[in-house]
Image (cartoon, rainbow, N blue to C red):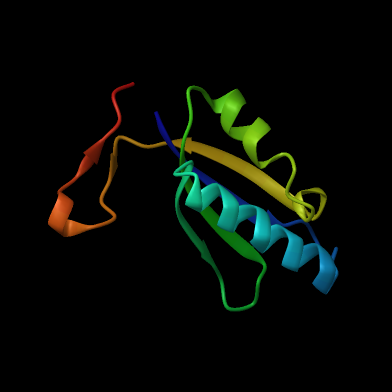
Length: 96
């Protein structure tokens, strides 16, 4: 199933450059493994979006649980019906 995970900064709690760099390295690995399909972040680095494949919502949360900045963020998991990431390949449907 495909999920969008929305991560939003929790209050004024900040994370260090080291934590952020480790966060990006982990996501790069997940992208190269094909688990994370898309990653985006706001210009202010206070909101992040991850589109990923996993068996369940619980597994999706387990996959991102190693992100070092996660304790500074609120997590919202949204099951997706459609995710269009490359128009040359068409739409990807996730059957609930």
